[in-house]
Image (cartoon, rainbow, N blue to C red; front, top):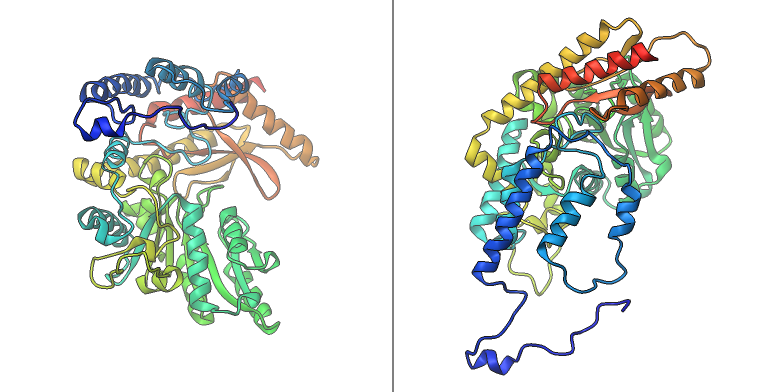
Length: 490
């Protein structure tokens, strides 16, 4: 069977109408629901308790496991035990251990347990929250979450926003909103300005929004890997002289590469002078604004016309939780709202937000609960403390690595990310890159920690990103010791 076929028989509708007992597999009885929940609960708790003990990554046999999991059609039913064994024992272990405490690669995502519980509740209730009229109370909870974020970044009451699947969709909607507000129908002349460290999702968003690829300007950076405002100004003036329309500037509130924070106040001044929209991609770094040090380093964030945040980064939530905020909520509505005969009357007053009218999505999950529930249970202070700890840990790691004579820190932590490489005046860049690749291999040989490389100025470097609520001093000490051993053995 190569496709999903209809069953030969169905439970009798007449029997159901007459009140006789029927078998409906899609509607388990209470005892069966409890059995499923008990089995899943046991496996989930075991998985969380094992995070510190299992490798930071294990891809040996991953291809074979993936091949084993392949199905061309659903096949016959399996037992719950068989399915859980496949997921927890054979597939999940052959991967990156993203929620583990020694995963310091990419930008870690912790996967807060309270949010996983919220997802179970949200999936069970299965209410429709993108239209206010369908579930006003639950839509209000999600609106509360957006309002919390607005206050955190210093936005006024007139601001608005929505929760997205992540930073990429948030950046896309930001570009679309900027295009709507600053370009109208003059898309062909529109130009976008980013630094050469800006996340590639912005260039992709511009392409999807109809902006010509050659009209996305990558501006150089200074020694701190922050956008050069003088070069930006010069490029804008040059484009204006050519008849182009510089409608969007994008600043970084913590780059993926190194956590660099652009001079946001200066960018806001440039945007004001040229009538451009200022968007700040703070997907990685924005939630550091909950801390005193983070607010200082992100000074000027509140001046942006729009801001991308990723709660699945800075608030340690499960993947699939992003956010776009706009200082003028009306701009989101003007860019995204369309009506249809089958839709209920949309709201226009007060807290009554129809998220479908200010975002790309009509049908989606109740994302707000995965933020609202843990904050209700824990308060915001534990999140603030955890973020402060990550700033401390990054500074400590940088100080320790600077004591290793063979290494140089090429990107000091501005938030919780740093980058380093082997010292060397070897004029052969390829040979030096190869030595650093070998160093990374040696760091990874015990699979105790996972780091990732990137390129700065065209050269291979190794980066550490500390952004997991489970990562503490002892785990960063393990990372530094792995680096020390690797350097010694190299």
